[in-house]
Amino acid sequence: MKKILLSILCLGGVASLSFGQLFDHTANISTSGVISAYMVDNDTLVQCADDFTIPVGGTWDVTSVTVHGFRNNAGADMDSVLVQIYADATGQPAATPMYSATHQLAGSVPSPQGDTAITVTIPTQTLTEGTYWVSVAGYSESASRWNWTTSTTASGANGMLIDADDYFGAGATAWTDITSLGITDPDFGFSIDGTGYMASIPEDQLIELSVYPNPVIDYVQINVGSDIVRQVSIFNVNGQRITTIVNPGENKIDVSDFESGVYLIEVTTDNGVGQTRFVKG
Image (cartoon, rainbow, N blue to C red; front, side, top):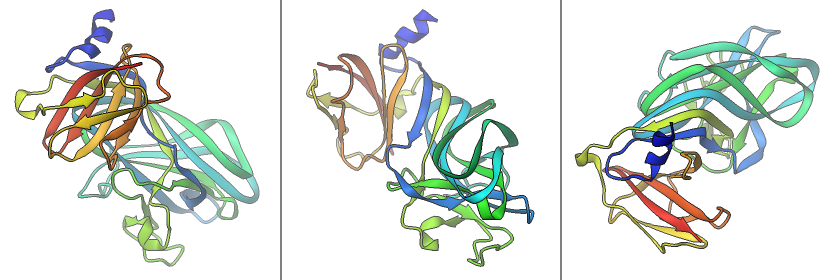
């Protein structure tokens, strides 16, 4: 195991390994939310989903999903949720989930209840490179339903909602972009934990990558030529993923809060993947 952990500092197609948080989209959650609930009193499911992307050459063993949400009005405690994972089908969840199960919560969520992080442990789901969608829906009465807290920033595609029975009369009987339903925030607050592996990157998928300044104090600047950066992941020397930023918008990453030490940065563009090291002073 020591040999694998140390390999994260090696470049040029050597596999890397990370533990713990693989994806995090909780930094910009709002005070609003969208219903994602199986309403037990009228046998109706209205659910939301959001996407995440595994980089080229990557494999994730997903073991838990954490979602932020809140409940309305007075009602019975919520003690279970439906968790589903979908493959991507041209920018929306596929017709059938690849994983679907109801999970009892470790601690029930009362109603009313403000924003609460719920972590659901699932059987290990091994996912390879590509885009996936996760959906979490709480079992609750319609009046005290569970709402998935939204995020003010987008990560990948916008969040989706489906109301197959058209319970709310919005016509969203197929997966529908939440912003087209008058919802301002584009995404949902969630994170994914497990173990991530980055396989050897074929020569034809390697891109030229450099970062500066190095050592760095506050911001590390990424140079990938004319490529557009789609995802940035940073790992420490133990193989732990420190952060992942999807579609950063600019090629400058704030590392001012990082502890001093050596880090590996992995950058994904439309043309491939690059890895290099930097030192945080």
